[in-house]
Image (tube, rainbow, N blue to C red; front, side):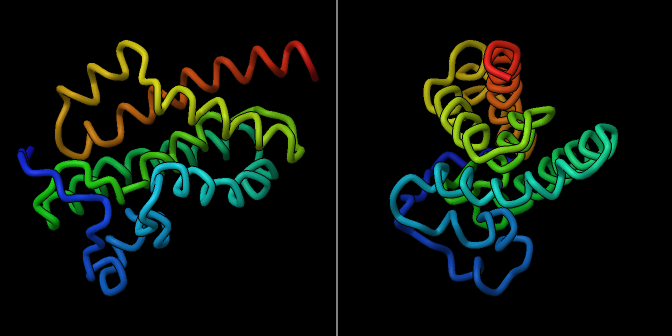
Length: 167
């Protein structure tokens, strides 16, 4: 666990994003380089994967979630260490995984994707307890990922309620 006290402004885009494949992935295929609301852009980049993952059996989707989450613990920690900044705003792999959690077992359709996007962004931005505590006190790749994983779980629960009511 490396602690990086200085936060780099979101406007600073490390050139390594375009040269290093790990940085490119952590920055959401480059979406995290956008100057305004990189977490929102990273969440949007996650959406095209959903229709593909929805073709998998439930266990296959769950397996993909596990792989991307475990990979994210390592990836986000590595890129934060490389950049010498804890949780650079451009690191959006965590938002992508949060979106994938949110939309597990949600019916197909653009309106469900939109609802999932809005619900996840609500929890990710608001950060109700214990998400905010994790965001502030857990460091390294686990800390970068865990607040968004938990926001995804909260959003998933909300989405399951919406599915129960409207589907």
